[in-house]
Length: 323
Image 1 (cartoon, rainbow, N blue to C red):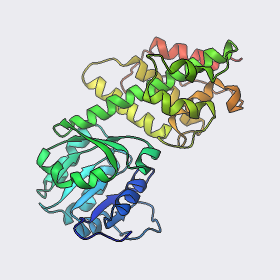
Image 2 (image 1 turned 90 degrees about the vertical axis):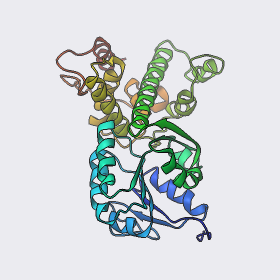
Image 3 (image 1 turned 45 degrees about the vertical axis):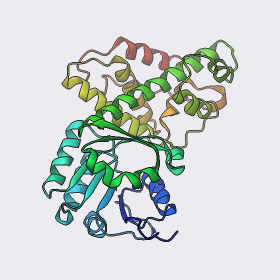
């Protein structure tokens, strides 16, 4: 679709699972979109650098994988930034990385919004993301209309950095929920209960959640095409564990998930959906025989030191057990 008069041009940096779909939403809505990605893509208005994106438009949405990538993009963009720019970081990063990013942008008196989101591949394609916003409400109003194109809700969470905390906290819930669903399916399987009875049982059960509705059907069908990859969920849980360590909080369930996620990464599952961890239980529908793999000697999570949480020890024992 051609640009509609009166619709501001938008810049998007990062064309992964979410960024590419946000670009499609913006174009359908009539925005001219200027884009850059580390790997060159055959896309209209693909520019050669983040700085060129900043020269072409004043409102820029960033979808990169981690704090290092975010800082690199902003540093490259810095010479072209002005006080007219609004930079939105949609990557899930730590509050510390968020503050560094905001400081880089502030060097040129540009506005910065901490803007992580919830919603996976299909939600992004349908324009149904939910954005968590940290920052000045006046800066949000400058870009609200373009965010509405790819979202169903825009939720203000407070100051810069606080939206990042909310995003990491909610991802811990999702990670642990998928681990719990995997364990529940394992119990049904070992006791001879048809696995499809679980969603039936959950229909009127308080344990039902958006996570179970979204992930359980895919787990039953062994559909692990990436809506949210295991490597990214592992990264986000690691962020949460590091944040907890800073505040002297123990997160044993998050530590257990980090352990099993790391084992999945070692098996080459990093680019698959994080619900792929259910493969460790080798359900009949997944038709997969797993080779023996030794458990890591120590937990991978930075919040753990010498002692391995009891929950993680039990988990590894279960994974090593043969049928």
